[in-house]
Image (tube, rainbow, N blue to C red):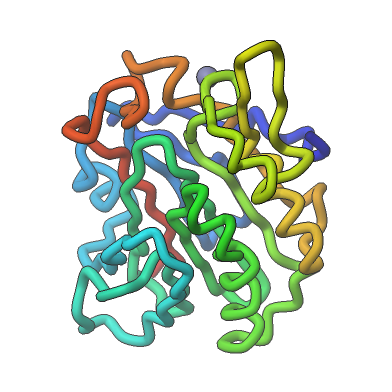
Length: 233
Ligand SMILES: [Zn+2]
């Protein structure tokens, strides 16, 4: 995958939370939990008491979070964007992709929960469009990061995925796998995001269930990783 060489810039804080180190600028913080820590530790690390979350219905709806006092979780939304400092955006995942968006110049951020349904419905592209509309963010200036998710090594799919994800489905013998991360990067590239501005955690939730939660490996009753992005207050 043709993404930034800076992909390894992940750092584990003492709290157990993970951060995209110095990404993309000191005024924005983005990170996620593993099995060992709570979402509250993420919020406390950036001294952000206000959080907005999405209902997450595997749809393609993006909500603009415009104030510190809104309803949360936001009904029907799978992605959130904001430029309000101190409002932390949250999504929860266990195999689906947490996709982080940041426009450091305009101090605006976005966060999406994208599984195969969200990707097929163009959710990453819709976040790019929403940020352009709400904050005049040129797609070429967006920084994007991808958190822990199920990857081609583990994501076995049925033949119906070939029509949806074309070159991102690989068949070896009777085993058919799909590279959702590759599909997300291609979708972002097509709407003007520069591949060198995309950072990937490279963590596979299903490969390492000691550290991450995986719905595929552990079933629907497993926990969820929480991802967060915030414009620092
Ligand atoms: Zn894997």
